[in-house]
Image 1: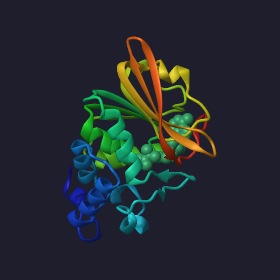
Image 2: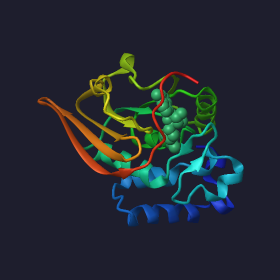
Image 3: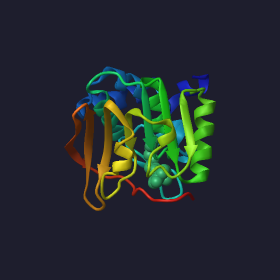
Image 4: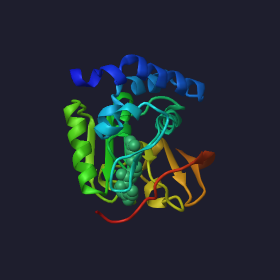
Length: 218
Ligand code: SAH
């Protein structure tokens, strides 16, 4: 990462370390996830006017009615993916500002991320490029049906909520793969899907709040 990435003042190492300590208090234990969250300069993914709040445990607006997910949920979903050991290729649906993609890029060698809103896609690509993060492949596309041409994935994360699990998407998981996704409209719950040789196993983890998964490009 470049010098800007290391931040000064309100985005100092101390501010970032406080975020890491809070994540530990909230139950995040995976050291690779905590290190990745420390490393990625979250303030560079939000508008300058919001930079001073970037390390608070809140979601923040990123325009077009979308939000950057709160640090806890970003860390939690990645921890869920990693719980059974390292994974190689990961797909994220809903790039938004690119923050979670940048964290994923610290932990997984190969990341694909899809976004349906063109200006968000363009800005995320630029931010990731400026940070010299090269292992994220960002696509401008409706990600509801995943990215079959690059499947299978060892991990899939959805950053937007749908009323039910897409079976087409589930099929893009490799055997041994894991998917973390919110399901629901008003009441949403984080689900984990695990695929093994016998098939799929689904478990419910905790209540969450995501923007809705929408279809088509915008
Ligand atoms: N991962 C982001 C969260 C962004 S919010 C972060 O790091 O904070 C969720 C994003 O999902 C929004 O940008 C929204 O436009 C996008 N989204 C919603 N439906 C989608 C779809 N069908 N395909 C791709 N992206 C979608």
